[in-house]
Length: 286
Length: 273
Image (cartoon, rainbow over all chains, first blue to last red; front, top):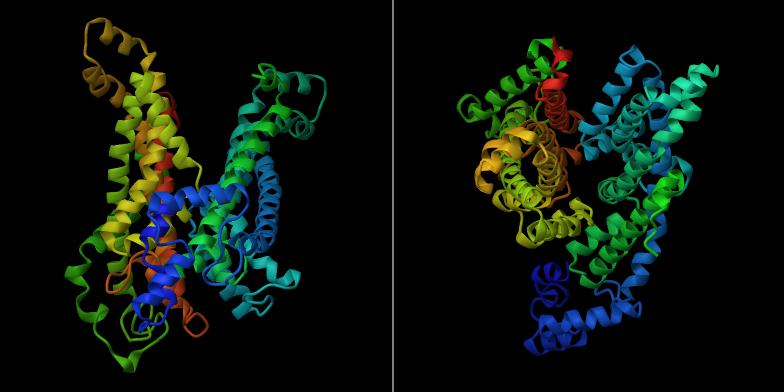
């Protein structure tokens, strides 16, 4: 990432006037440490990163980490909201579909999730704007502020992953339906609905949580598109802007923050799975 | 066997018809896609032109077919390249084990850690937007899935009786992999490839839409949507139709993948009768 950003062109050429004399360019590079060999730049970067210093943003003249962290809550709230929406809908639809495999509800859910997988996110976002903002005038086209601003971004962000998750919920539930413990539950007089919700769903949870973790990581991709279209000033939009402005410090800080979030999310998923399935806990290496 | 699944049949017919029309579009489209005509700019669909015209008076349908040709060709090439590279690596890693496996696994794990779109975006920005760069960047971000699946399948098939028999008979590793392990995983890989064509098409159009993919004078479906976005209020068809085509193509490949998953698995084939 570091090398990629350095290769993208000389920021001195972008931030100084076209007619700037060479001496000014040299001063600019020296001030931002860009005149040193790449290996030394990386060493300095790593050393400073451990102290929480990611360098200054070339564009905003402020510490890059501050710029990134200030945008982070906006993206996090969007991603959390979309994940929650997506989980709630997917669990509901998946459970309804699994109640009667190959019934009409199942077919409908399968079709809806196929649409979710195949629909291009940016197009869905635009169509939602055209339908609900331009056509019906119910919701604002972009920006943020009231809850009405969040409806369309959340929908656009949640739809695709919802399709995938509903399909996973359905498949794992149907697999569980024929497990011996389900026969026991039915023999004890539990209704089919109760057997599915209390017994099958509980056993299907580890698989579902794993997929939710993947979806959470994928939200970083989706957020870039959705934030750009809806003018939501979060991390995704910041990253697009920073790449376009060759603002290395901000790009690096943003990627590092995303990477840390991904690692934390994966750890969280593993811990959740271990909590849900005690068998995974036994051979602890420490 | 395809007759057992109406949705897959429909998807295949659509893909073949649309693919042929798009592939041959330079022959039949003529001047409508290029000729500027300001008398008929932004004319709505279902008038003289089925999908209407763009701000320069060009027939949108002709442009959609030409754009779909680029998008389809690009997706197929990317999937062919990443399938060839990824599955070879995964096959070798899974079958051989040991240090080749450790090396390949750590490479895959490192690549999995990042959101693919962000990385592709940065790479496209640096390399400069062009069709060959797009193919390279997308291939680079897509081979991982093939490598993972091929590795898992190779590890499974390595245990199979016929593979052991062949090895016991003194066959070399290369021969066993080519003649016994690869055919055994062909069905799974074909299913994955069909899914990936849809995935690559979506990635390509997303990158292009964000301005980091294909640039004019080349056209792709994502670019048409991006250009139409400026006229979203006055001419919604400019966004609607190109995106709809991406959606229909991606969906057809997904449906076909679902069918392949069943048809390529002898134990599941009864479902199609």
